[in-house]
Structure formats: structure tokens, C-alpha cells
Image 1 (cartoon, rainbow, N blue to C red):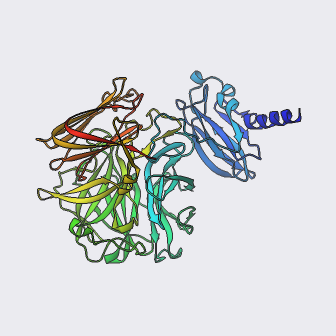
Image 2 (tube, rainbow, N blue to C red):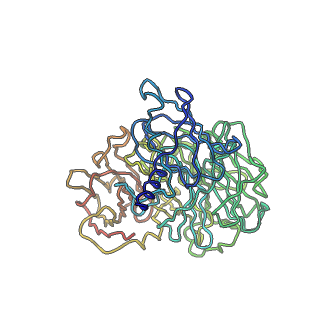
Image 3 (cartoon, rainbow, N blue to C red):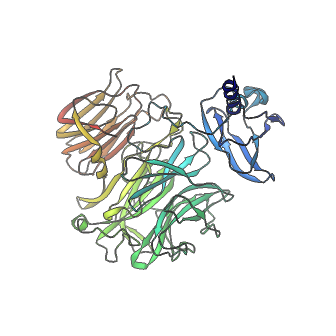
Length: 580
């Protein structure tokens, strides 16, 4: 009997959040109980956002959240961590009362729960097996990526309070092999300067910023009523950050002023940051990461201007002839040498304006002298890094070993990212890829090849495709590859040897009903003859690469069951299982 009473008491504590206090047609307060780690908030995605102010014992504002609280049914839960001093939730709803009914009857009051745990066990049919995803919630741009002491650090735009875009925070994952990721606590959370938008991180080996040698310094956009640039520093290798008291460090009267990418420029002995400003990028320089001087702008007359420019990155890539002997110590301040024998590549993400609608990544090749970027291509030319529909916000890791340039994309498209058929989480990263340069007909092309760490996942040869596999196709001229399942869902890929063009048709790939923009055929130039294709299949994606990296194509797919049949005409396929 005593055990039964204890169980009933525990259930009561975990079920009711507390009686809400209705203060109007759209206003309520909730007094928080103490003694539990989380308040589990019930989410209904179709509802309007409710604004939540978290108050402490002195009625001071601790936190602001925008949450789609459940009105008549619960899609899933998200955890609000109950920090010391939290006392009251002041909640304002914005839905139409004529449609949603009285506030007192909302499902959220019945369904809120206190708990010491939050279940992150995978409940999603389409969660990838070997691509990085958040444990729960929404993810978009990769941020602040760096490599230090054998660990890859990936931060990302994260909404901890729902699986659609909102409440931008830096989430954090770490890996020792670029494939298997471990979730870490939130890294940088919103403050009164604004939400934490995209940015970058560097290891300040020499301690130029005054935070100590080897400190990790993150630079990010504070997105409030204006977009300004702020910094934070970490003395524990990037696990926890302290915001700089002098923030913001760069301000400008511009509505779109964001996504700082920082690197050390050895020839001029200064830090350089490249920022997206409307439809151009701007370069600033600094000796200490705190005080910045404007240098120059680029892009008004170059490339694609179908949308806002975002998430820039400026890379120095050595000539392939010299790359074999180019490895440098990872303890140096930078991977950029004094004597330059290569070229600079400016990555520039754009939304909308992609070649098949929505978001995509373009790039420019040229030279950078520490002050100004000079493009070698025609202003009217647009070069795309990846010709798939789901490759965006691509940036590179700071300090990658052996002089490698390692990039990671967000694997989605803003046309439908909030609507793809998952709930527990939304969005994954594409495969990590090593970047290089290739000359084709006198023109410099950026190459993307799956990072060599992917080789460790290749398992035994199998006869049929599975939901997680790598397919290597040896191509003999024009080639057609069809992946299909018993439901008649299929992805058809075609290489036209004469036109030197690769295409992927996902119009009948599975569930396409969530967006008119999803079913499509994407095409890409191959910049030469293709001898071999590498296809990486995961539960919700198909990524295709030519073996030399001249062509890359990343596309989401949502089949109701795995593709288990392959037909190849004009080539021979070898299928490898992927071990994870």
C-alpha cells in the first residue's frame, strides 16, 4: 500500500504543471513548482506562437521564449530547464479565439508535465543513420566549427523549444571521427542584444584577444531590433562560453548584417572577418578580435542576386601540385602561409536564388591580400558548389588537421524546411566533404569529395540497396541509375556523357505532398567525363559525387519504405553496407 501511494504521488508530480491563472482572452500566468529538472511543454505545430516570459523571485525577466503551445492536441513535447530562481511563466497567446476556443480549455494546461528526464530516444522513421542531427528540435546553419585536440566541434542554429525555426541558440555536438556525434549542452543562448544567429569560432593560439593562449573565441550575430556582431570566449575547449562585456564589437546601419566568418591572415598578422551585408560581403580586420576596421566590400556586380546573401566563408586552397607537402602544424595561428601558391575561394550562400529554387551555395575564385578580394571570374558567371536542392549554409572547420579544408552543409531548403515530414527533430547536416581545386578549360573549379573518414563506414558488399548504403557506379558512357521500392517510389539518376551533365529526378521519390516546391529534377555540369559515381543513401537523402569531386548533388527524399532495388544501364554498381 505504501509503494502504491508513493507511485501515485510521483505520477501526480509528473502530470500537472499547476493551475493556470487566466488574466484575459489571450493572457495567462503559470506559477512554477520546484524540485524537478524540466517542465515539459506540449507543442502543436499548426498553432500560432505564444510568447513566454520567464520571471524570477524578484519579478525580473530571466528568459523570453516563443512556443507553439498546444490548443487541442499535442504533437510532441520540448523541455524547459527549470533553472534556479525561476518562479513564474507569463504567457501571451496570439491565435484567433473564435477558432481556438476559451483559453482555460487549451490542451497545454492539461498536458504540461514536470520531470527529471526528457526522452530523446529516436521516434522518427526518417532520422538519418550516419548524418548529424540534433537530438530534438529545429536545426539550421552550422556555426562556429573548429578542430582542436583531436575533437571536431560543430555548433548549429538551434530551437530547443520546437521543431520549426524560432528561439535561435547555438546548439553543440562533438566528434572524434566527423561521423559519430555526441550532443553537448547549449553553448550560447539569447540575451538582451538578441537571438544568437550564425557565426564562427577560432582557436586564439597566441592569446591576441586577451582571454589567454589557446582560448576559443566565437563571433556571432546578435539579432535583436538590429543585427550586430558579438564575441564570446571559452577556456575549456569550447564547452562553455563567457560573453565579452564590451559587446557588440561591430555595428552597422543595415537590416541584413550577419554571419561573421573569422580567420587569421598570416601575411598581414591580423584577424579578418567576412560579413554578409544585404547582397554583398564586407571585410573587416583586427589585431585583437575586439576592435575592428572596415577594409572593403565585394559582390555587388558578381554572381547571383536572386536573394539575400548569407553565411560567407573565405578559404585559401593551395595548388593540388603542392598540397601533398603542405601539411602544417595544427598549433599555428592559421593555415594560411606567408608565401601563397594557391587561390582564395569565397563561399556565399543565397536565399532565394538557387538554381532550382530556394536556397543554395555559390562561390567565387580569386585572390585576397588581407584588404580586398579580387575575383578572377566574369561578373556575370555564377558557380554553384552543389547542384542539389538541399545544400545550404555551407561553411568550413577552423584548424582542420593536415591543412585540409573540410566543409559541412545544412541539408535542407528554406522553401520547405519547416514542413518536411518529421516532428521530433527537423533537419540534418549533409556529409562532411573535403574541398580542393581543379582547372577545366582554363577555369578554376571547386571540388567536393566525401571526407576520407567516410571510408571507415564502408562495410561488406551486398546485392541490394538498403536504407543506409554506399553505391559505387563504374560508368561506361551515358548511364542511367534507378533506385526503387515495392511501392513504386523511385529516384532516377542520369549521366549524359555527350552533354557532360548529371541529373537526379525525385518527383516520384516518396512523400512530396508537404510542398509544391519539393518534387523536382536537379541537373549539374560534370566538368569533364565521369568515370565513377559515389552515391550515399541514408533514410531521407541521396548524395551523389563524381569520383574526382567535380560534381556534387545533395537531395532529400522521403520514401515510405527503403529503396531495395537498383537498375543500372551503361555502368556497373557495387553496393556496400554502411556500418554505423
